[in-house]
Image (cartoon, each protein chain N blue to C red):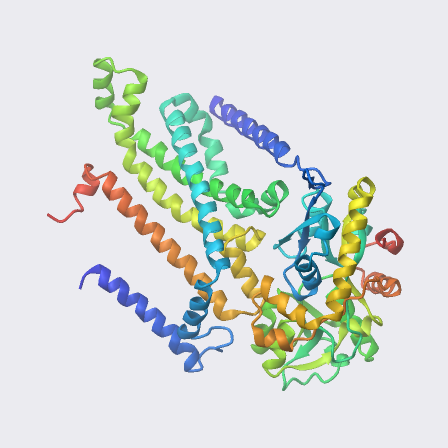
Length: 325
Length: 255
């Protein structure tokens, strides 16, 4: 019995130790470090995909340095870690799709968008993401997806809600679509091997599926809303309130980067080689998204309605005005 | 044939098999490219500074994490092992903490250290520490009571007994612990980079995967395997050299 008590006591001591260590670890402030020259060290949580090419290009072009911002891009762990990272102050800014931001808002996570991130091209059949099937698939239109197994990268998010809208618009019943969750990188193989009937893929996997003879059945971002704003850069409500000047300079830097990227697709394709390993052939051929500087508010409201229709917000209703700048 | 030659033959067989499977159409070469294409991707990658930076980052995380775990494991092991009350008091706690997979601590690591080296270190140290600690505890328990009593009769102090009786007895166990910990530390370093996105080879593998650069992905995976082999060989050589006097090693050396 004494041995058991002693064991419990040490466990408790260890727990206390770990607790105190965590207190030390999370001491990083939310405002980032400012060095003697007044340059702000800013960390941005991103996913190393095509969508964030403008921020890497803007960094190369000095659009942030000229505003006294020294950028560090933190990539990895998918998008899920970015929102907590921004709220806890590990990153000053983050990149996330709009539906995730709306979900965060319904959970009262204190975040605020500061700039547009990436938008659909708005052209049927020529967007940077699409629902693809094998060449010999019996699925001919989006309506045929009813009751089929469709892969998306995250369940209850922007992928499944927009795919359902494609099916609705084509006159199909989206209720019985069986969505399967898997990373985009696994989808070309899963589609090829018949593990799923259709895949929602974005570039560069979209190019890979097309090269393997895949057929496009729906441009779900285009079906969801005209010129849909897919993602945005955001910050914590805390930083937005405490350092409005930094947020303003970051927004200006992003906007200049977005405008530059939209006007210089060749430089975008080149910068992709610096932070991804997409081969040169794919880089020159893939479909680039649009990078407008304005968040299309109507499209965000549509995303909120689609999400509510599919029940991804639980009982809550997202307040679009609270998310947008 | 010596075991070394057989080992090389086995590896060559694996390389030929990977070359043949996609060429014979048994697997799709888009998802498992033949050895020659993986080797070509590796050749290109060897010429980039990014690659060597990633190798350096992985080895840094591995080395620091392993060093911390070994020092902590030996110190804690000797203290706990030589004080019976402490041994009894910590036994259940160690048995509770030890089986927790380091990977389960990823959310904790991300909360504490974000995507920096600190996250990698947390996972590496946690996994490697128990390997060392448990071996040290066995080693301390293996001390010959007669030797210990003899040392006491000669009025050896506590420190002298640790130095001259406990340490030589525990040393072979310590080396076993270090060798096991070295491999585990590499696994966890790469895992942390792969999942969390801390800089290093694991992150490069993740980037290659999301970019659809399949041959490069396999090339980088092969590099992590080669690192593991190199680390294990180095640990064995170090163990033999340092324990040349010990019967466990003397017995293995052919006369």
